[in-house]
Amino acid sequence: MEAVRWIRVVDSHTGGEPTRVVLEGGPDLGGGPLSERRRRFEAEFDHYRSAIVNEPRGSDVWVGALLVPPEDDTCVTGVIFFNNVGYLGMCGHGTIGVVVTLAHLGRIGPGEHRIETPVGVVRATLHGDGRVSVVNVPSYRVRKGHTVAVPGHGEVTGDVAWGGNWFFLVERHGFDLVPERVEELTDFAWRVRQAVNAQGYPEVDHVELYGPPTRSGAHAKNFVLCPGRAYDRSPCGTGTSAKLACLAADGKLAEGEVWVQESLVGSTFEGRYRWLDRERGWIEPVITGTAHVNAEARLRLDPADPFCWGIRI
Ligand code: PYC
Image (tube, rainbow, N blue to C red):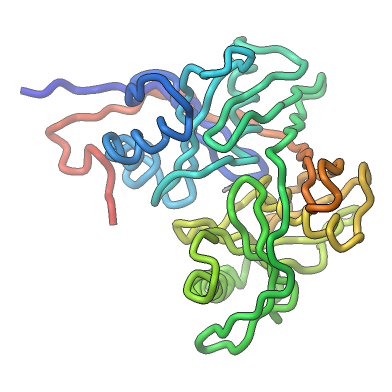
């Protein structure tokens, strides 16, 4: 008879968006580049992904963070982020969650820490007051003003940008970005994503709608639809990075200037950037936010449980 397995996790949330950090009992992905190990996770151990973040132990909104030994030994850890449908390149809110979790466990203290992800090394500074600033991977816009035909809605124009994941950013959409309209926003953004994927950019898996802020001091509010149809409760670190790349390219935000990004639920990140290559429009974004640990647990995987490996639809 197969034995019960245990997975040790620490849960946190960053601006309302949850992160489940896997400390022990996850899949052994061996060594090599993290992009390779991410592929191995997907090809050979995908059942662990759904066991950890999908129902009945999780829900569509969870992001998991599997800690792995880094290839680059200047890094404090490697991390592979995953969600209800697959794997992420980088994750801003998740990185802030990882840093706060490692500090909670006494593994790191205030200061700068390098963290390896499948799309590159990011640098995270844990400040004395508990805030975390993440120097994200280089971010850039590849297309300004791409128009797609969205069935049931008409033409929608947006920008395609990379911020550690691929985004389609839309400013003119006609919706109020309020939690009461979350179903309509989800439905619209999903149709936009399908149109963008079919009409030129199959790699885009996040859609970001922008609007005026609700909170004083914020510059904009967003609604970010994640690959598995859940919306990001945080302002989305990689999405804010993609937005900063667009603002920089349009000359709307100067190097070093602070951009306060509000999420649908009212949480905020501070973003700023420095130019890496002005000609090519490449920036280095810095995202600052806070996370809170809210559970330490051991997940129980009982082979007798028909949903031991999560509900996969
Ligand atoms: O903060 O980058 C982020 C993120 C991506 C998906 C959910 N959150």
